[in-house]
Length: 479
Image 1 (tube, rainbow, N blue to C red):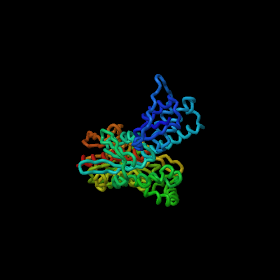
Image 2 (image 1 turned 120 degrees about the vertical axis):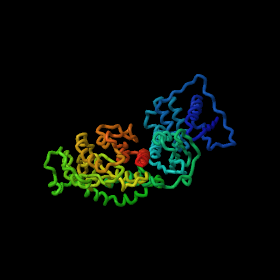
Image 3 (image 1 turned 135 degrees about the horizontal axis):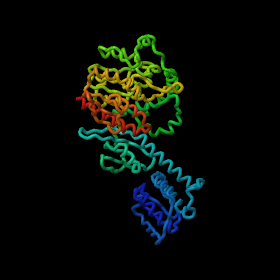
Image 4 (image 1 turned 90 degrees about the horizontal axis):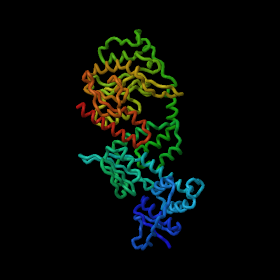
């Protein structure tokens, strides 16, 4: 006798488990069962009713099989239901079948599970939201083309990562929407239903260009991790051909630019080094420009010995907002200007998107010299210690004294410690204002370099949106 099992959908694991249990306990052979879903059922079919499980009969299977089966049920292979049933029958005779790695069905199960897990990872890595606004409401929409039926199982991940956003992910088979409180699913869509590119695409291009290392380029490995099928939906993919084409020359230029040791101090700067003890301040400066010139010879802490030069703050003395970071990085140390590296590019983009005029800001760092650890031809950033932060606070206080801003933005824990004189839990206090005893308002947020250190692109985008919200709040606070 042949049986036909109709499941409610492509991922109906509970329906499959209930039917498979009843059939297996009645010793129905795998070849006598046809599996189909409610989406492809024959309206004119008259299937034979499934047998009931014998009274008192039990069936135990390893937890490892249940975990793998729940993943494999999401695969697009139409034969997956039959494979799972064959394994279920076989485990009645061979309870430890899942431990026999050479069994053909166990191998097939493992391959299908691996494919689903990989597809889940790709969705998390390559979903790109586009902002859509109708004036009063703002939401984010993404288009993605998964290989398998993973949308429903993957949705909770996006709820956790983008809980504060109203978003929709459209796919050919299924769509999912989060309104900030409730998750709902709908029918599939086409790419034409998805919005076009928006300003946030520039972030992905900046992020990708900055993490691209031409010296480590392996095209086949890159295409394996980022298959070409996803390229048409990734804004940063437009950069790939040129990055690959110029990788050899870029790697050569990068090696030539990177000093094995920091550049020696210029003789004129050496001449201006204070003859007073390191802790003594220079003569009172009459202007911000004079203060900057004095800082060129700073040796208040040992960091000056290895850095290329002092990287002082930059911006108008009339600035109403001052942004304070941690310390200059490798590119800032070479250029002698703050916020010109990868984190500075992200900062510039977010500031512009928030509607803040960059040229009216003053940007500086809590520590004015680059602290690093040499590794071959690379200089790896090291966090300044409390003593170095305290020693350099004199310069920051002088900068603020000349500018007299309405608001100071502390980007990161080191900046907050310098401005407030104590350690501050940025994660817990982010987005809040601390008013100092002298009346200066200090707004706490992350450093933009934190966004670039996040390995998963989806998480980086979420953090970038939070940073943008912080900057929009800064604009409102500054009036």
